[in-house]
Image (cartoon, rainbow, N blue to C red; front, side, top):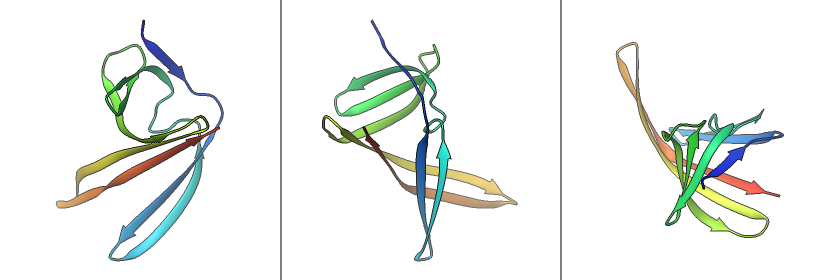
Length: 101
């Protein structure tokens, strides 16, 4: 049988962005993390894998950094290139998600 998840409630998302040694912090509330609202999940080794909806398409994959009864810390490496007005904007970093009861 597969593991299924749904989300309920709200989460506070804190984003820290560093550009040319200047750090900006933004906060906002959301009802889902990275668009995950319902689907399947599985653990492979130290990875937590989410599949959105009823499909088997991987939506997100996280490394489990630590896990206890009341707290889980997940990490995800980010790398993305976007072209804006013929300029390539490269974004790199690590997303850290802390889930607490």
